[in-house]
Image (cartoon, rainbow, N blue to C red):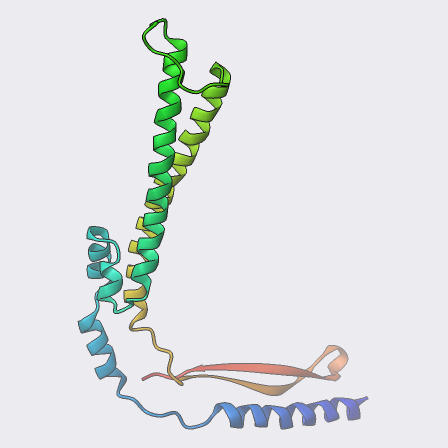
Length: 192
């Protein structure tokens, strides 16, 4: 039984040395203090948020993420078009519903084949779609500001090779002092 444990310990030790050898390669040293200082100088999350609040897409331009600007304006334009067309239909059905329900003989319903309940349901349908357009424009506007802020914050995020993970075999004493094989994981976060 202890031969089996010894075999697995040896196997894990061999495998862990290969993983450690692969992860412990010497990283290229970059002067990160100069890099971070330059990135902090060039970007500010608050500025990016304010720019995006003033004019959608301006914060993305400030963060040098120019490819996002057309996406923002496509979203705003699409939802604005949804609002505009459905508002036109809403006012058309609302006008005809008012003409159908008032007692003025000078106004008449222009839509043939719709009674009061049909006009009411169409008016409510277009009102709901119009409101979706307003909500969509608002969400794109808010996400535009959030995206600019998060993008500016992530400019200084460190993704260098200073992070490593090692797997090593672990021998522990289990119940009745019998050895058991385990796997230890070690994370290293190196300082700059």
